[in-house]
Length: 475
Ligand code: CMC
Image 1 (spheres, rainbow, N blue to C red):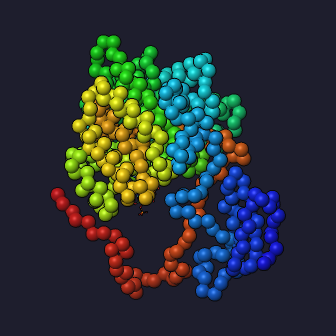
Image 2: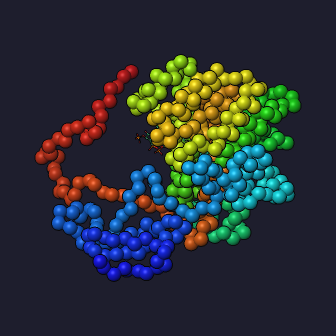
Image 3: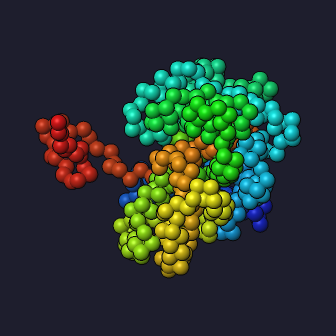
């Protein structure tokens, strides 16, 4: 056994014995994590037959497809215990926030770290609502989409488009330390973009809705809450004294709060990955929005309703579950990378659904959803894999009951998630030691070095995935 190459705290360390070389390495454990870079010091000469691309002399690589166990940063924002079904924003249990707070107050908490005092909240709320108005050209931009464009395509594009208006907020134009200096001037520029992005998220979302409905756009109102203003911008059709139904407004606000953040999910990671190049926040948020749109993430609420419609009625649930078990179908709204028990948000959504149904009447798909939920929860396949309902299982039913079109559901996830994306982006910009560009590694398993072959001497490589498809053209 070789000598340890380092002697850190012997308890808080991991001893690794490299059987290739006989060397022993002590790797420090900090906050129950080990630095992946420490493995770079574990080097070995190339063994006979080993591919040069494995680069054994350059140190051991850590492979983690899908980030199953890789902590990409230190964060003070959100904590999840997936086994116990716990979710806390900045230490506050999600249940308490859903009961007592509002989406905008929670936004302040997530972004700045503590609950605001009355005057602090007033300033924040005023700034966010004040920044709801978009440039008049945004109307033209939204109208340039086809009548049947998916609203997520409009929203994703609109965030990137928005950035083109704010040259003063763009590190590519103003210098790359625009957001990383952390002084008063830099923080002020950062906060202004935060107000703009949260404020305009509802406006752009409402525009994406109205353009598809053939409605004129409305200017964001004054005197309403963030969620109330959103409902106004969606719904208002020239009525005098329009006010949104307070129960529906509250329900949507709770749903917004529940969706505001969820630590290192796919879209937040995308925002950070994109932001790590120090690009402007509008481009980073547009990237996050695109990531959220996928059916495994924010598109799941839409997928749940499409699934329930396809099942049709409770009698068809057993056949559907059989198809899921044969992997012919996916039970959307079930399962989660982190939660191995019910998602704590799903209980609050379920309760909120009952409040909404008192106003709107029950959704005809509710019975099918309940039958599906009950059957899956006692089915061995789902129990064994610890698959339980996530936040999206019930949320779509509320959105449907409230009259939102099906393809608008992911937008209702994206708008509140802007808050979480910004909280993570801000934290990364201000982190100690500056921003490190996110540049993961790969395990190269492709061809080893080979020489170029002139076209006339090549032998065709056959196979379904080995070349471009032949497309059939029509029309
Ligand atoms: N239906 C059927 N089987 C499932 C499901 C599901 N919804 N989810 C996971 N499984 C199975 C999966 O096939 C695998 O089985 P096996 O071990 O036999 O191969 C096992 O359970 C483990 O699943 P996994 O795919 O390794 O889990 P993951 O952590 O990679 O994926 C997930 C998590 C959310 C993408 C997945 O559970 C899923 O596709 N769920 C449906 C989509 C959905 O509801 N997404 C919303 C997530 S919550 C809101 C958000 O944060 O966006």
